[in-house]
Length: 240
Image (tube, rainbow, N blue to C red):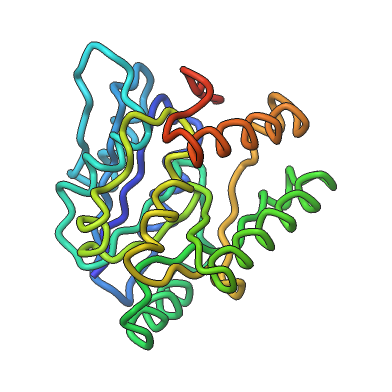
C-alpha cells in the first residue's frame, strides 16, 4: 500500500532513527526504499538492517535530490508514494497513515498531501516555532484555499498514478524541486495540507546557516523556479 522513498547522502547520523521509526508500522503493507547518492560513510550499512531495497547512484556527477526520489519511485511497488527526508520522524506511524490514507479514500480527486512540519522538541528554538508555523500556514492556504500546490520536501505523499502523470520531480533543479512538484500536481487534481498530522525533523540547515540566510535562499530560488523553471543557485550543499 505504501512505498516510502528516502533519499540519502552521508546520513549515518540520522537515517537509522528514521528507518527504525518507520519499521514500527504494522497496520499497512509498506516497503522502505533508500535512494543513496553514493555515500562515503555508513549510510548504506545502516540502511541494510531495515531494507534490501537500496539504490546507489554511481554516476560521475552528484545526484540531485529530485533524481534520487525519482529513482526510488521507479522501483516502488505500492499505490502511495511517501517521500521522506532522512532526518524525519513520524510520531505513531500507524495512526498517522490511517488518517492519511483515509483522506485519499474519501476524496478520489486528492492526488497528494503534505503535513505540518516541526523541529524536534529537544533542539527546537523560538525562531523554529515561529517560522515553521508561518510555513505551515502558507502551505495550508496555498493548497486548501487557493488550489495551488505548495509543500516542503520533508514529507510528501502522492498517488503513484498521479506522480507518473506529472512526470516525477524535475531532476535539473538542485533546490525547490519539492514545491515545484506540488505546483504541477495541483494541475492534475487536489493537493492538500493536513494540519492534523505532523512530522518532526532536525531543522539542521536553519541551525547551521541561520534563518535569515535560509529564508532568503528559499525566496530567491522559489521565485526563480516559479518564473524561469530553474533554480537561482547551482549547488545546494548538504548539511550534516
